[in-house]
Image (cartoon, rainbow, N blue to C red; front, side, top):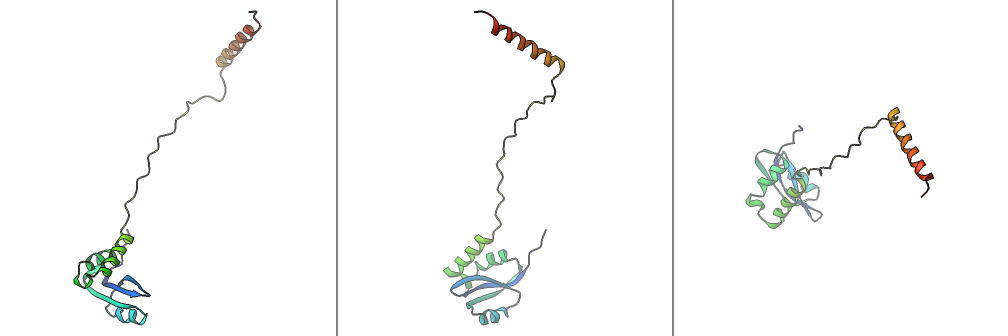
Length: 128
């Protein structure tokens, strides 16, 4: 099982008019985001290292992120990153099994078929 990366800092920022959730392991990430043109950068240190999904669930309960924009950003992230339940495939009915037949007719089958043919032929020639 693959291990998920853990983060100690998380929050949101706005870049080019769009808010996104951000993750880091150092609060100094704020400076990098600001240099990159991000606005409204809000990062906080988490109590314990967390996966991205765990971190967002913690962030959405904090007073610093109680505004509508932050809550909507978190909701979008959770919707996009929550593992989907596996859907069960429809159970198909088993295919009908053809009865096994031999590729060659036995002598008895040939004789029976010939006698049936002879009987039908005789009936065709019979007067009405």
